[in-house]
Image (cartoon, rainbow, N blue to C red; front, top):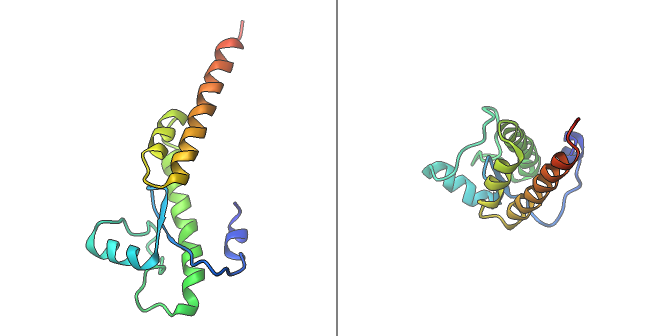
Length: 124
Protein backbone atom coordinates (compact mmCIF):
# COMPACT_ATOMS: atom_id res chain seq x y z
CA UNK A 1 0.00 0.00 0.00
CA UNK A 2 1.50 3.37 -0.92
CA UNK A 3 2.72 5.42 2.05
CA UNK A 4 0.44 8.34 1.17
CA UNK A 5 -2.64 6.10 1.50
CA UNK A 6 -1.54 4.96 4.94
CA UNK A 7 -0.76 8.45 6.19
CA UNK A 8 -3.90 10.04 4.70
CA UNK A 9 -6.27 7.34 5.94
CA UNK A 10 -9.27 8.93 7.61
CA UNK A 11 -9.62 8.39 11.35
CA UNK A 12 -11.73 5.50 12.54
CA UNK A 13 -13.30 4.59 15.85
CA UNK A 14 -10.86 1.68 16.18
CA UNK A 15 -7.45 2.76 17.49
CA UNK A 16 -4.47 1.57 15.51
CA UNK A 17 -2.46 -1.19 17.11
CA UNK A 18 1.30 -1.19 17.37
CA UNK A 19 2.66 -3.29 14.51
CA UNK A 20 5.30 -5.55 16.08
CA UNK A 21 8.25 -5.59 13.67
CA UNK A 22 9.05 -9.04 12.26
CA UNK A 23 6.20 -10.70 14.18
CA UNK A 24 3.38 -9.94 11.72
CA UNK A 25 0.93 -8.92 14.43
CA UNK A 26 -0.45 -5.88 16.22
CA UNK A 27 -0.86 -5.22 19.91
CA UNK A 28 -2.60 -2.33 21.68
CA UNK A 29 -0.35 0.72 22.10
CA UNK A 30 -0.31 0.55 25.90
CA UNK A 31 0.66 -3.15 25.83
CA UNK A 32 3.39 -2.36 23.30
CA UNK A 33 4.75 0.45 25.45
CA UNK A 34 4.98 -1.91 28.43
CA UNK A 35 6.45 -4.70 26.28
CA UNK A 36 9.18 -2.50 24.83
CA UNK A 37 10.03 -1.10 28.28
CA UNK A 38 10.25 -4.64 29.70
CA UNK A 39 12.16 -5.98 26.69
CA UNK A 40 9.49 -8.51 25.66
CA UNK A 41 8.79 -6.64 22.38
CA UNK A 42 11.28 -5.16 19.97
CA UNK A 43 11.17 -1.39 19.57
CA UNK A 44 10.59 0.23 16.21
CA UNK A 45 13.58 -0.20 13.89
CA UNK A 46 13.45 3.53 13.01
CA UNK A 47 15.49 5.59 15.46
CA UNK A 48 13.24 8.64 15.13
CA UNK A 49 9.90 6.83 15.64
CA UNK A 50 7.82 8.37 18.41
CA UNK A 51 4.80 6.05 18.28
CA UNK A 52 5.45 4.74 21.79
CA UNK A 53 6.63 7.98 23.33
CA UNK A 54 4.77 8.17 26.67
CA UNK A 55 4.73 11.97 26.44
CA UNK A 56 3.13 12.02 22.99
CA UNK A 57 -0.12 13.96 23.02
CA UNK A 58 -3.24 11.89 22.34
CA UNK A 59 -4.01 14.07 19.32
CA UNK A 60 -0.69 13.06 17.69
CA UNK A 61 -0.80 9.33 18.41
CA UNK A 62 -2.77 8.28 15.34
CA UNK A 63 -0.32 9.80 12.87
CA UNK A 64 2.65 8.47 14.86
CA UNK A 65 1.16 4.96 14.82
CA UNK A 66 0.54 5.15 11.06
CA UNK A 67 4.12 6.30 10.51
CA UNK A 68 5.34 3.44 12.71
CA UNK A 69 3.29 1.01 10.58
CA UNK A 70 5.40 2.11 7.59
CA UNK A 71 8.60 1.53 9.59
CA UNK A 72 7.46 -1.96 10.61
CA UNK A 73 6.27 -2.85 7.10
CA UNK A 74 9.64 -1.74 5.73
CA UNK A 75 11.44 -3.98 8.24
CA UNK A 76 9.11 -6.88 7.38
CA UNK A 77 9.75 -6.33 3.66
CA UNK A 78 13.52 -6.27 4.09
CA UNK A 79 13.29 -9.47 6.17
CA UNK A 80 11.08 -11.15 3.55
CA UNK A 81 13.63 -10.26 0.87
CA UNK A 82 16.14 -12.62 2.50
CA UNK A 83 13.79 -15.60 2.45
CA UNK A 84 12.31 -17.76 -0.26
CA UNK A 85 8.52 -18.09 -0.44
CA UNK A 86 8.38 -21.36 1.51
CA UNK A 87 10.49 -20.06 4.40
CA UNK A 88 8.47 -16.84 4.58
CA UNK A 89 5.28 -18.93 4.61
CA UNK A 90 6.66 -20.90 7.58
CA UNK A 91 7.49 -17.67 9.44
CA UNK A 92 4.00 -16.29 8.84
CA UNK A 93 2.30 -19.52 9.91
CA UNK A 94 4.26 -19.46 13.19
CA UNK A 95 2.86 -16.03 14.09
CA UNK A 96 0.28 -15.88 16.88
CA UNK A 97 -1.82 -13.57 14.66
CA UNK A 98 -4.54 -15.42 12.74
CA UNK A 99 -4.24 -13.02 9.81
CA UNK A 100 -0.52 -13.74 9.44
CA UNK A 101 -1.21 -17.48 9.66
CA UNK A 102 -3.76 -17.18 6.85
CA UNK A 103 -1.25 -15.25 4.71
CA UNK A 104 1.32 -17.95 5.42
CA UNK A 105 -1.04 -20.72 4.31
CA UNK A 106 -1.91 -18.79 1.14
CA UNK A 107 1.76 -18.16 0.36
CA UNK A 108 2.53 -21.83 0.91
CA UNK A 109 -0.20 -22.81 -1.58
CA UNK A 110 1.16 -20.27 -4.06
CA UNK A 111 4.70 -21.64 -3.66
CA UNK A 112 3.41 -25.18 -4.22
CA UNK A 113 1.48 -24.15 -7.34
CA UNK A 114 4.49 -22.21 -8.62
CA UNK A 115 6.75 -25.25 -8.10
CA UNK A 116 4.24 -27.52 -9.89
CA UNK A 117 3.99 -25.06 -12.77
CA UNK A 118 7.77 -24.79 -13.07
CA UNK A 119 8.18 -28.57 -13.19
CA UNK A 120 5.60 -28.99 -15.98
CA UNK A 121 6.89 -26.06 -18.03
CA UNK A 122 10.63 -26.63 -17.89
CA UNK A 123 12.67 -25.23 -20.79
CA UNK A 124 13.79 -27.68 -23.45
